[in-house]
Image (tube, rainbow, N blue to C red; front, side):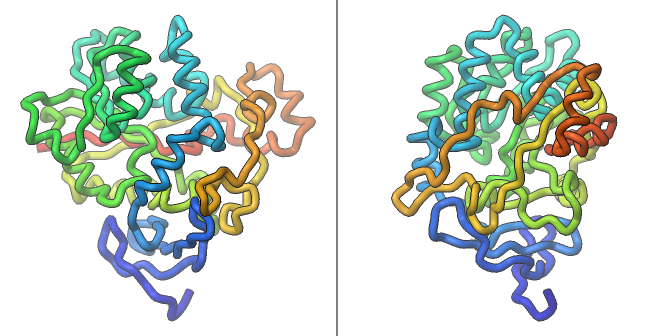
Length: 336
């Protein structure tokens, strides 16, 4: 957009042109501008600032909000599962990525693992149940207390940027799923992860994938300020370079070969129609769709006839053997 106002990219610092003005915020009637960095391929919201009040409103009524109700369903499914890690792996690509990488990195169950941003604690619990030595960390005291009550005592409430200075513990593996897109200071948090890792240790980081959609796509992720940035492999490589990590990315062909996933109907996130948002008085603007059954189908490959009958599944079928998923699975290795 020639001549449009630019703001500094939070990753590389370059002036990033305005891509879309007046994008609908998560809580009506707030709006944000969306900027796109030409150097590191990051889209970010402006102002680039989180709002704790939005999260307070969300976590008082997660069962009423699309997207957040899923966390409650996952918590309950994991609590009641005999093999909770398998349950999570079957549900979403990001959990498959974590389970697959942790299994490869810690076959003898001797690694010390930390989950940063553990939330309600179900992933930490799933890995613990699978025999791994893991603790969960979250900045929210209410989330940590809920995790302890549901799963046990292996959670700690702390700010990840403060935690390295308050403990001598260092970890072989750090897990951080769907957190980096929420952060005002992503480089500072990645540096804190590096400080918590042993030399040669790895951080497994997942985030919604900008690369999964065409380059012309604008902000196909949660409305700001819930999500502040939409990352690509290029932007994550720039983050790794600036924080002295070696980076590689997950190959999701194993997941895609085993699963056939139906895509939900498109949502007009910019206009707010069908978006998952709050009203000015913090009430949900949407009616929850039913739990994902027909809209998110996990089935065996022989049943591809269903895909042929429904056009929205065809795209996913074509991607069946692709290495991509709708999330990026980034493997940050500490190098010294």
